[in-house]
Image (cartoon, rainbow, N blue to C red; front, side):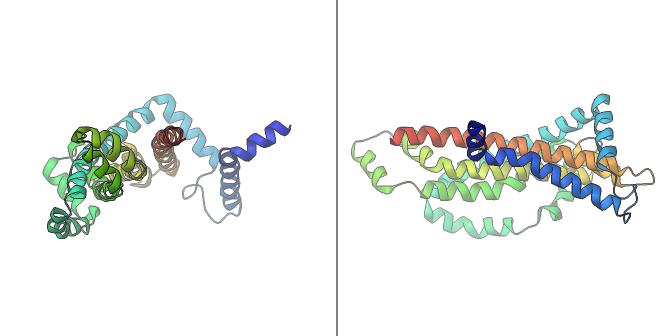
Length: 263
């Protein structure tokens, strides 16, 4: 019993998950029991669960999830590569950053929702347009994190490596990458969530498959099915949490290995 209590204290955040979920479902059912919302507006948790099982059994949910995930990961990968390359250059060249920063800030100020319809018009309703919208969602936060990460490198250590005529690629792999990685991983966690958001927004604007399409289909037209909308929302949350947790796991492994190196 004592060992269980010690485990709960060490990993209380994991034990809190079912508690929070249970309280949420209880509050949800309590609101429905008040009679203020009919079933076609706010379905019961049980009806949503039944719909979830039905869609899973039909194989539809995995198809739509894979489509959205492909769009989000493609946009994320593209945004990550461009942001890392450009961020590294700007981080090492402050003068170039001063020249390009007005244009970067101007582009960042444009709302993605405003230009997303143009992407759909230009590139159609395929994966390219949706990946580009996801790219726009991740690029700027990742760019800023990369620049800050490169600027956080200890200059004394950099100069020390230069004094030993260390090749640039070793300075990059042994000093710059480890120093900037915590900020880069933090940006990746946010970026994956934002790339999912971008893919969903794109599917709202025009799609015949994907989780955004499921949510939109459940709320639109005379055949509206709010249980389907909730299924789509729940699946979006699950996928986003898995992506976020995967990067968090990598972050934890990196921080532990870095701590061992310091010790």
